[in-house]
Image (cartoon, rainbow, N blue to C red; front, side, top):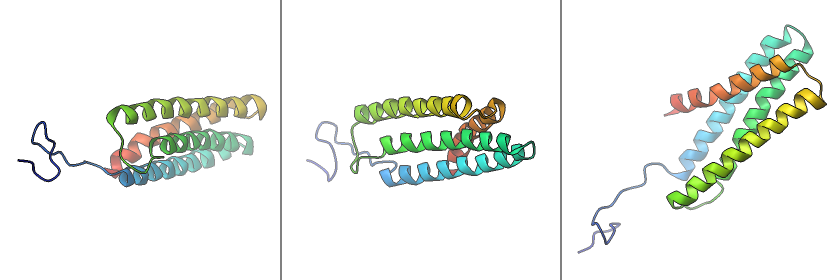
Length: 138
């Protein structure tokens, strides 16, 4: 005796808690929050000079770009996947995210010659904005 949507081995059915579309919407919300926090920090550092403001802006935008890379990696597939596949996407996405952050920090400080402290402040504020935005969204 099988019920609609039930598994044959246990007789239980567990509905999906969140859809892929909900994850995509949350990712967009988080990236927008990171960009908003970045603009506020960059405006504060712009008082000290345009180079400081630009450095803070670059730092936060690097984190927002990296979060977008993670979201694209996580939600690229149109259909749900098994837990192992999702875990692999999460691990690879996080490795790519922090690779993008490291490359962005290098390019901002070494190649562009922008001040480090404002850039790190932009990175930290944008990074901290992500869990706050996710918590407020749910």
